[in-house]
Length: 111
Image 1 (cartoon, one colour):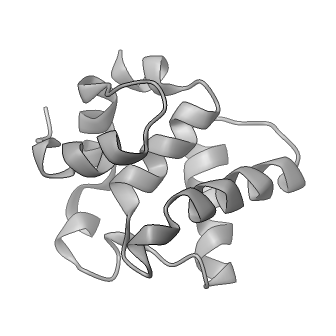
Image 2 (cartoon, rainbow, N blue to C red):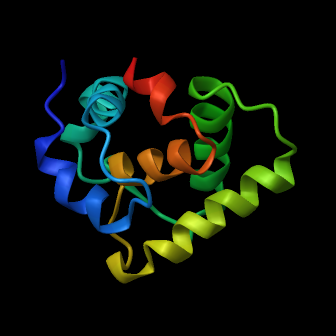
Image 3 (tube, rainbow, N blue to C red):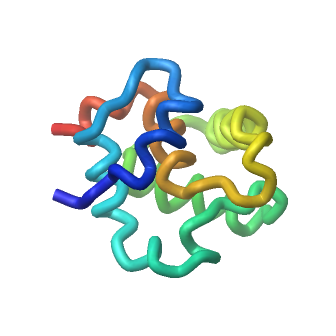
């Protein structure tokens, strides 16, 4: 299992439904080596290309969401707004966790 402890407090700060450690560990494991690089470990909400990748690779690819693009983009913007206190340093682990939570996918990730 990947160690998600470094992200737990940040996730708890924003999550609505408590903290699902198993799901957080799956996200950390999924991101793997990308988390070693500062640039790839954060989500830049000001970068449309970045948000497109979040939608296509995470929401559609990993979470298997079939929602319309507009619905996914609205959810991503909601997470950007929720995490606005982080400035340009939004943790990718927390961001992905919150999207999974938003779409009710945490239990699937955690199993």
